[in-house]
Image 1 (cartoon, rainbow, N blue to C red):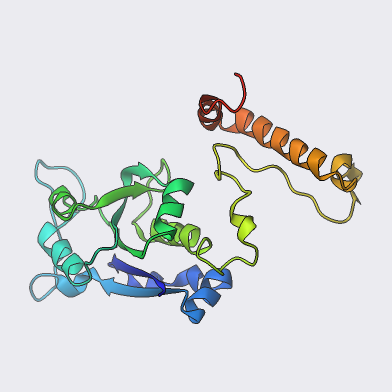
Image 2: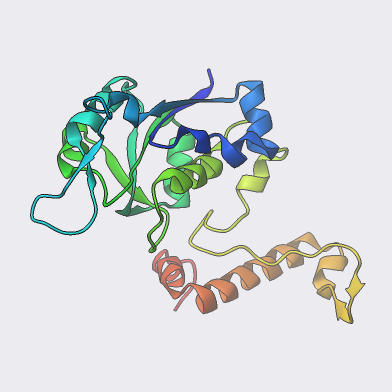
Length: 233
């Protein structure tokens, strides 16, 4: 059975977008995963199919109405996780991506304007997820990011299953640097250890490189790694 996703959005033309290309696109054609897009405006109110209103308490912008969003969710709801893409959500992590990839699929709700009325999020028991500490125009791009991260982990999507195991965030470390031919380019040589065929030495070098990059670039992840007891601080 394929991994199924429903996307609720005001801009259905944004999907599948880049997910129709490359690995994700081939997997979509092969039926490894399926995509259904629902236009939230189909559940809008009145002749103009209104989906938003002004926020209680004042302030700029508009808020997506809970009754409209709830009807849209009700049209597709089942036992799959319900996810609202919003800047105020919990950060998307590789652990969450793997959790979703191991499940039956997901229902993704793309916010717009100032956001979605909190009552429908709570009433539906949805998860709020963010892809980073910045604000976009809506939840469509975050939905594409989340789906791309999940789809590549589905069985058979990547040519080598181990490709998804030895990469950044597979543990609290960034990935080691990569090199290919030519061995000498622009006066820069490939690290000698990678050319000698000593797999134990290569593994040790890659581990050291991952630790060093994480310590320099992501001290928050390095602290998590230290907390695992893998190495002494």
